[in-house]
Image (tube, rainbow, N blue to C red):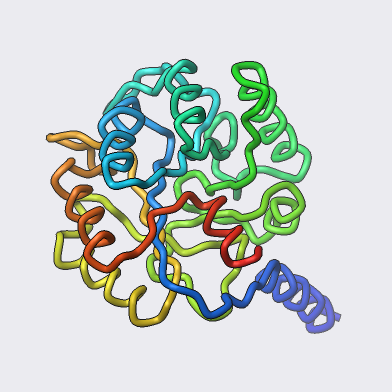
Amino acid sequence: MWSALQGRVNNRLARHFRAAPHRLPAHAPMVSFTFDDAPDSAAGEGASLLEAHGGRGTYYIAGSLIDQPSDHWHGLSNDAIVRLHRAGHEIACHTFSHQCSANLDEAAMGREIERNRSHFRAIDSSIALENFAYPYGIASVWRKPQLAKAFRSARGILPGVNRDVIDLQFLRASPLVNCEIDPAGVDRYFDEAAASGGWLIFYSHDVADAPSPYGCTPHLMRHALEAADKRDMPIVTVAEALRRIGA
C-alpha cells in the first residue's frame, strides 16, 4: 500500500516538474536584466543605465514593499512604477506580501496574486502583470501549475543560460550581485549565451556604489551592459524575450 501511494506521489511530482516545457527555436542570443522587490535605486540608477544602452528591464514587485523602508534600501514609489512602465520597462509580479511560494496553498497564492494585480491596476490600468518571480528564489512544485495558468512565466534564481528545452515556470537566472559574481564571471555567462544562442537572465536588487548583499554597483551593471553591446546581444524584457521565442 505504501509503495503504491509513494508511486502516485512521485508521478504527481514528476508531472509538476515537467510543467510548461518549451523548446527554444534557433535564434540569436539575448539578455534580460531583472530586479526583485524593486528598491528605488533600481528604478533610478538601474533604469538609467539600461536606457543608456537601449535596453529595458523587468521589475518583479511585491505591492506591500512599495515605498517602504527596509534594512538595505527604500522601496520605489507608485510614481516611480508608473514612470518605469511608461518608459517601456516591464512591471512584473512577486507575491503581494513577499511571502515564499512554498508557504502558500492554492487559495492563499490566488489571493496574493489578485492583491498585487489590484494594486497595480489602481495606479495605472494599463499595467498587466504577465510574468512572476518566486520570492527568495524558492519555487514550489505545488504552485507551478497554478502559476502556469496565471502567468506566461515564473523565474527562479538557479543560475545558468536558458537554452534548448526550458521550463517556463522555472526560468534560470544568474546573479548580477557583487557578493556573488565579478566581471569575469559575467563575461563567462555572456560567452555561454553567445555560443548556445540562449537566453541569459540576470537578477539583482539595488544598484548603488555601496550595494546591499543582494545588489550590484553601477560599475558591475555597466560592465554587463557593455558585454551585451560587444556581442551585439539585444537587451530585452522578459515579456519581449518570450514573444521572440514564441512562448
